[in-house]
Length: 200
Image 1 (cartoon, rainbow, N blue to C red):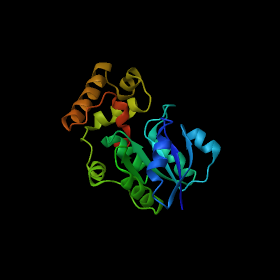
Image 2: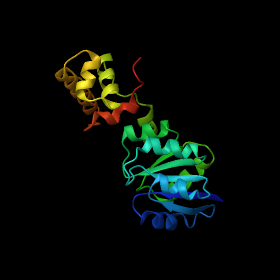
Image 3: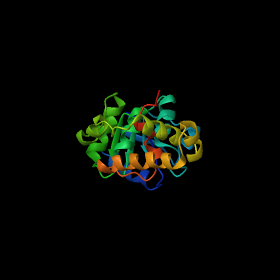
Image 4: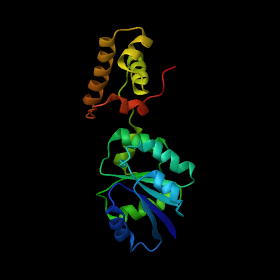
C-alpha cells in the first residue's frame, strides 16, 4: 500500500483527492495539511507527498520540495499552473513529478505509483519544458539578475556592478523582454533566478 499525504491550500482538495483515489486499491491518503511546517510537525507516515505549488504561507515551492525530500519522502507537485520555471525549479529541487490539477484520476494514481518507485512522473509536454534551455543572457544581465534576485536593492546591485541604477533597470527590462519573446512573460524577474547558474 502506498501511503500518501497531501499539502494543499484548499481544505476541500484532500477530500476530492481521496475520492479520486478511492478505487485505486494500492493507494491510501493518510494525512492532509495546509503547510509544510504543519505536515512535518505531524510527521505522518507517508511514502509520497502531494504538494500544492502555491501554499497559503507564501513559502517557496522549490524550498518546500527540498525540505520534504530531506525528511525522507518522495514528492509529487500538483498545481493549476504548468509554467516552465515552476516545473524546472521544483524538479531540480527533487520533486519526482509534476501534475496539473485537471488531470484525471488515472493519471494521478499512475503518477503516484511512478514517484513511489523512483520514476519521473512528467508528461511529454512538461518534460520538454524542463529540457528547453532558458533564454540566453549576457554576462552583465546574468550578474544583475543574480544580485537583484538574491536580495540586493537596485542601488546595491548598481554599486556592486559599478554601473548606474538606470543601467541595472535596463538589464532587467531586457531580461523580461527575452522571456516575453519565448511566450513566458515575467512580472518579477527575481522568480527567474533558479533558471540560471550563479555567475562566476
